[in-house]
Length: 234
Image (cartoon, rainbow, N blue to C red):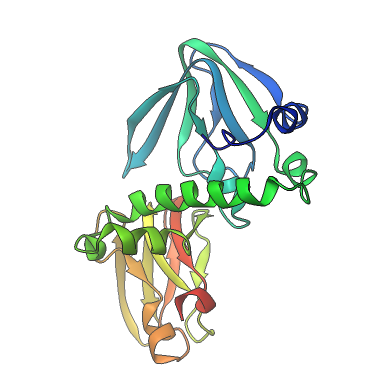
């Protein structure tokens, strides 16, 4: 559906930039947190997509030809992989398009239209993430789709400091997976926030009040965040 309006000669040109990739039974293509920016189309076979919920991994879909995935990383500079993708039991053959090769097509008449369509798909997929957030459960689909266009996926390693008390605001964060600790210099207690917490977000106070960050937030596990920059938040 991404390229269905292209003319025959345009499809022939585009096809030159795709390469075939074969996966054996249950072979892993990429994992949560990877920053590979390749776009994939399933040509044959099936792929299994799974996500983490706390310490458990859950299969959310099994997709076959002509499904596609990877558009979020292709069109958003700061995003990383939000799921694990494996070949199914019988393996899979994929068409892959790297970010570098996709950029070589810039300037062609149909390219900007295809980018807009990919961004719409990416926004829709991110908005489906946001539907699971406690504080957004009563927000309608139109608004969620709008929000999906400004959030980016960000991976943080264990013990990495996300926000430091006293620094200028760096954005608004929602925990999609993982866990963080929240501490302040003046208060000894450590508060832990996980992706399953009702209030699984942070960073908004400094942005709203236009003040320095009021606490230090550090990842206590490998963590996946949905991030909005200060400019986009405003």
